[in-house]
Length: 152
Image (cartoon, rainbow, N blue to C red):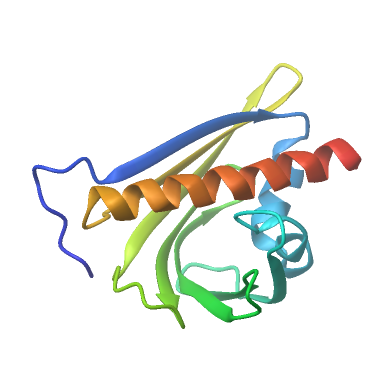
């Protein structure tokens, strides 16, 4: 696991309110078919593969294809799974130059009027540059997630 510099703010937290029930958003984060529809940091990306073993100790692996056609993978292990309210999992890259090491993601889903508040916390980044890059990536992915629920 990467060792963050204690003087650096090493986490990202993004909150969104989505017009969908918690169970549907939980499914979007845990279903391979759903992940293929929205897990893209920007336009022009695609997700040719997604594997999920949704249980504490189970693994996931998501293959993303970038604009240049290169496929790289995100993988990790589920540390906590509480449908439909919380998922905690490790996060590592495979197939790209980045030497980020292992980071940690917590996804929380809260009922609110008109839908669900989604809170994504991604932590343990070794540098502010890594944190900022992932903040952009999450923003792009969550934009696609919102569009998916708007389209039904």
